[in-house]
Image (cartoon, rainbow, N blue to C red; front, side, top):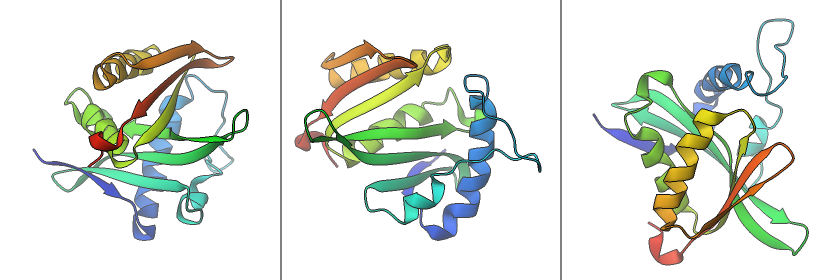
Length: 165
């Protein structure tokens, strides 16, 4: 099977919007988001990924079939005016989980955007934590920090320029 991480252009937006429904449905287990009156979840930031230069949408394909997506953004840390990358949203379609696609996609994105990274996992999302913690630990060779925040766990690490693709 082939797996591809592809920058999502505007023509990919309808597919990403549909994948977002599956993602938000899964995520409803951890957040109190409700569907709207036509039975859809809303994600108010999606349009910004094609409008703002510090936001980057990606779709994942397995043999040409939709397999997931990621939304990456470049943020300013207000406490010290430094910038960091954030995996704002990340989703692998259930059919493609446990095939190492998630790990391949995450590593690809980290290498695509060298620099400081922050990744957050909500409290209660044990599967998310068990996916991200060993992946980050392995990718960084233990050079990361993990801290408890109000709503979950934050991982901080750096991707060196020489690790970039």
